[in-house]
Image (cartoon, rainbow, N blue to C red):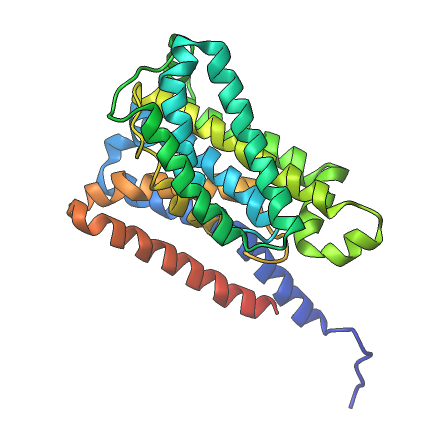
Length: 324
């Protein structure tokens, strides 16, 4: 009988684990490909420049909100206020940012500062982020209602021009998604400080022993969440042209689902910016176009969307077991 040295595995086992890891990393792209194939089969005319512009109309704000949630999840936290925060930003964008730009910019920068302070509070007082952000969701909702008691306002002209941009050959939502994924991937996955930010969720004790400030990393992660939440709210108003205090309420669950669908995990600092954007695109396509083409009533679309997410996550669990 041949003895196996400790810490070694047969070549077949190593190859199987490598294949499982590859399949796990490709799962978000495979999910998106399956959704696109289903749409192409149900309505071939949708696979066109105009079709993608129409189907992915709301993909940009969803992708930005998903990236915002991803930064919090990278630090082993969760933000239950990102949806109402997007609505608050939308109300500020459609009112003060248009009529009094200096006040609007100051309010938006201040809101990013509030997010940074939330990160410091959660770390210093060792508070559950779920509880803190849940409480903040009511604060953002109340402020949005105070700013805009009823739907209205108007997006700034420069924002309308950006969101209505139509580049040749490649639809703007796809181009914007590629740009968002590339910028965040380079910043978070390819820089030394990005490693530190992810390390705060992966191994906080080792990071502390190395002399890095966990307080600072938590502040930076929450500030980045606020920044991308502001961009999401502005992009949403640039598409809808007007605002409503409840316009972003559904983005909380969409952002969490997008991160998890894109390969992220709630613990360990394991996130993927490219996967998160792909997950957001998958949800944007599955939320309305695919289910509409399947003639599923609107009352059932939310349940069907959840079923799609469960199926993908179940496949990821099976792959992860094989990898282990």
